[in-house]
Image 1: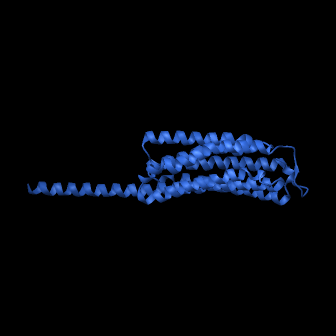
Image 2: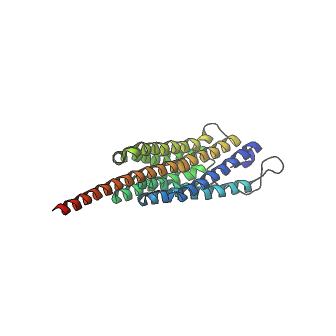
Image 3: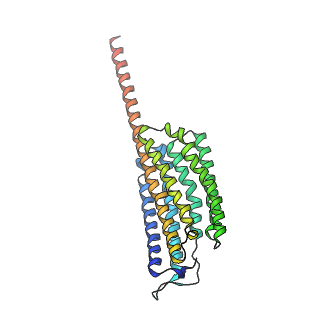
Amino acid sequence: MEIEALSLGQYSFVQNGYSFGFAVMAAATLFFWLMKSEIAPSYRLAITITGLVTAVAAYHYLQIMLSWNAAADVSSGEVLSTGKPFNQAYRYVDWLLTVPLLLIELILVMRLSKAETIKKSTILGGAAALMIVLGYPGEVSDIGGLRFVFWVLSMIPFVFIVYQLVVGLKESISKQPESVQNLVQISIYLVIGSWLFYPIVYLFPLVGLDGGAAITAVEIGYTVADIVAKAVFGVFIFVIAMRKSQAEGETAHSENAVLEDDSAEGEETSKFS
């Protein structure tokens, strides 16, 4: 990355984007973990992982921001390289950890059978990790052809994941309570939509953008996609868990009321027998 290709305005815009990303991820983490007690025990693991995703992202955004600051000297009013490279690997380390967890939290909040949960989490999590690993060599390459090759390779597990979310989970979604079926569908489309943004941003340097414009578009694009895919998606997971907790609580209350009525009727009958 030629950081000197950036104007001072572009450099500051990207820096502010990192700062905003860190703030959103940190705030989301606190919200998910502090509100976890409001969720039924069956769904607390999903919310714990939701908070873990944003916590890992917050840490890496802090590291990205520090690396960005260390790579440039703007004291003269121009963006000059300090000789310290900007570490692009932070994003991919973050994605390698958080992208599989995003899919796992979705599976957990659906509360499928144990066997189905393990199977789908393993398949989707493994495909997500492979997608990230295949994308990294192209991201750090200055050769356009090599970047495109690894884009194609990483899109193979991406398409597989999309198929599994749209088709593979269709039957499981139909078994969810009516109050959350639409939310689960929206969450899946949110994942797909935000994830589609990543490969589009990945191709920016190959479609005419170069220099500071390309760097700014890629870094801001990834930051926006991260916020939607992790923090916004996490809010949907939390709402799903909250609604299912409330529904199950109401069902349990109704069942207890029926049992109490039956018990009272039995006592009344015994009095007259």
